[in-house]
Length: 354
Image 1 (cartoon, rainbow, N blue to C red):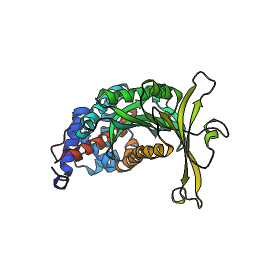
Image 2: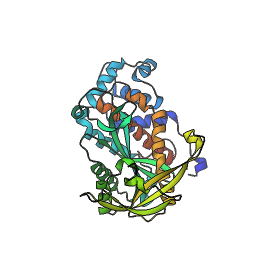
Image 3: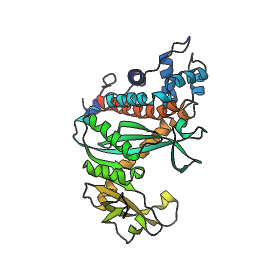
Image 4: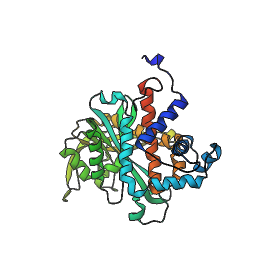
């Protein structure tokens, strides 16, 4: 079917297939007098897609039960103890909604990213399952999810997610996501990682498995460390040893990119030079190519911020659900994104390969 003749998606058809997909991979049950399983899906999808809350959706949905009743069902079925099973089911749903052309295009570029949601509760870490991070919005405690995306023909496709729990090492998160992607028959041509993954254990693992990778690296130190590399007036490549003189020493090729911030973005009246640092594993790229290729994966973060706005993730997090349900809110948005892309690339409504 030519692109010009491809039928447009129908709202009711999308809703129907979305509920069918959730029922297969993320089953929710309700056997109350006025609360049914279909009602739970209707409310959950309405909250995620309409940027509403449980209260607002229940007030507008005809025949909807009390909001606290809905919360009770979510708390009972989306529990902390079931996080591993929830992760497995979500990843199964994502795989089922990959566009068909993803498997036909050979090795693909993949990016891993961390997404944090602020945690303001008082529970201890071992019970609340939050992790520490840089201060943001008044807290250093976060729920964290690691995600793997493919970058195919300018489109971002969610491949897998992994819940990050206290005690999880970053290198183990990278290993698990890479294993999930490869176990589904996908080969990774180049792996892009953001600054949160930049660590010597991760570098060593990627080199050991000979995975071509480009990792953004934070610039640390006042005069020494990687700050000492930020010299000159041009971008350049060099060799740098991390943790020099220590047991975890690692030497790699790095690219230093000298860029200029724009007044429009920073609201400064004067342009200012800044440095970007990239670590290359099994790659032989120029600094310019490193920056250009990495900017492609930056769209991932943009797509997530857009998803939070368009799919109502922040509102979903404020609905008073359980810990597992809060993580489920983010994962639901990823599933919906993959589902919509599958519908869009499959042809007419009703022919999506779910």
